[in-house]
Length: 105
Image (cartoon, rainbow, N blue to C red):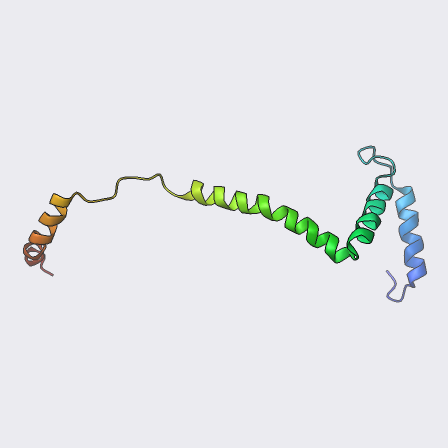
C-alpha cells in the first residue's frame, strides 16, 4: 500500500469497497438517516453532542448501580451464626492461658 495516498483516493477506494459489499437485510432501510436525524434533534435540544452523550451515560447509571448491588449481595456467603455462645466464650477466656502452656515449640 502506498504511504502517500491522498485523502481523495482513500475516500474513493472506501466508497468503491462499500458499494461492492453485499447489502445486509438485518439493518433496516434508512436506519442511519434516522439515527443522524435523532442525533441532530437531540443536539439542537441540548446544545451539543457532549450533553447528549452525558445524558445517555446518566441514564445507564441506575441499572449499573443496581447490578453492582445485586452482584455484591450474591458474592457474599450466606449468613451463618458466627457468634460464639457466652458460656463457650467465657470458657475459652478462662482456659486460654492453660492451653498456651501445653503448646510448646
